[in-house]
Image (cartoon, rainbow, N blue to C red; front, side):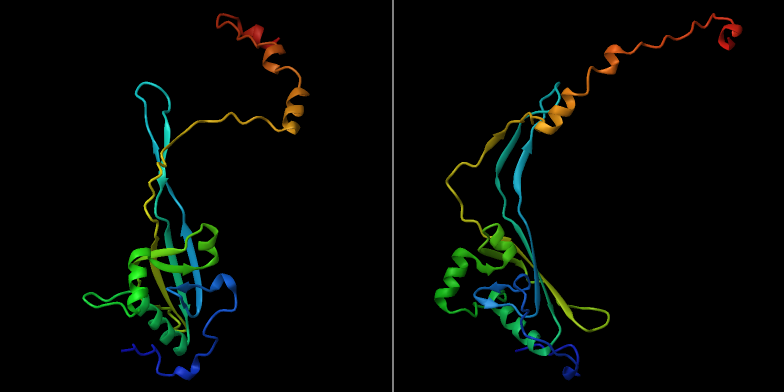
Length: 211
């Protein structure tokens, strides 16, 4: 059962079902998401910085990649977009106690490999599948001209048998040739050549200070 559009005056809203811009298009579970879609990904590694007692610093260790957070923000403003979005929602979010709307083969694949996602931001980090953490809630803007829904997901990463732990070693970064030439041409350090000012003895008479 479809949920009605938020305004009875549906004729007041018009526009294409899908954005013509590549970065505003997204596909979930093989279904195009309507409206304007903005996807934000936050790749992250588990970094452990250990502290050695009694000395400065300590070893920094990479512990492997964590599942990337993926925020899918959908903006829609027409009755057609709203109807299409509800269809997408039924594919990516299973209601409690009910089966998926996908056919059996696709449902099994989604359960094993996550929801397939296609978007340029995801392609940049080779993110091809996600697990939907929260489908979000539709929020209508104050002017009631459009609705925004934010779907929260996590990258689906099959477990690897490869050990990803790696100790990070600091590196001494050399000066570029331009900076090295400037340093060589600067001459000796003034601290090594300039005279060191002498503090006047507290016992000196006031007249000596005014000469």
